[in-house]
Length: 138
Image (tube, rainbow, N blue to C red; front, side, top):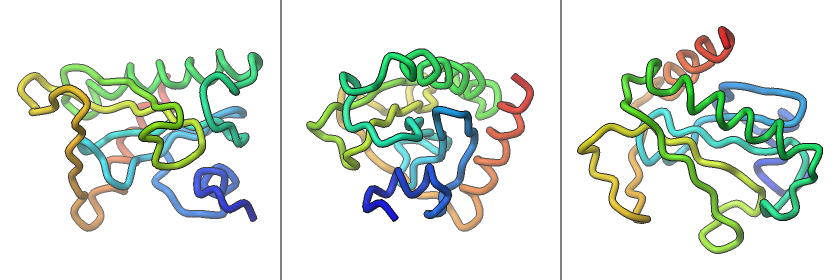
């Protein structure tokens, strides 16, 4: 078993609220979201930074980021999304991950200070199910 928690999630060895899985990616809810419905998209193979992502995975990775960003507004009653990633600095897990965060005007997100919220008991599973349902349709 890998010591990387994201590799463990990709391999099904650690639990996560997975919303989508492809040959090259896994997308799941962030446990400490900026806003509820905040999704992390990771490559299934261990890659630490974007410059290390193989060319063969670049297009499928960003296609999945785009697909998730497309469904979040309707499913979560958001006005748009914020898409971001860190490379080493501020990267809490040393495995490439792209944040796809639901946004609404006036939601309080300013600059690069990302306050975090918590899900109520069972609420994370509900958000994951809603996103899985929408993603299964596109």
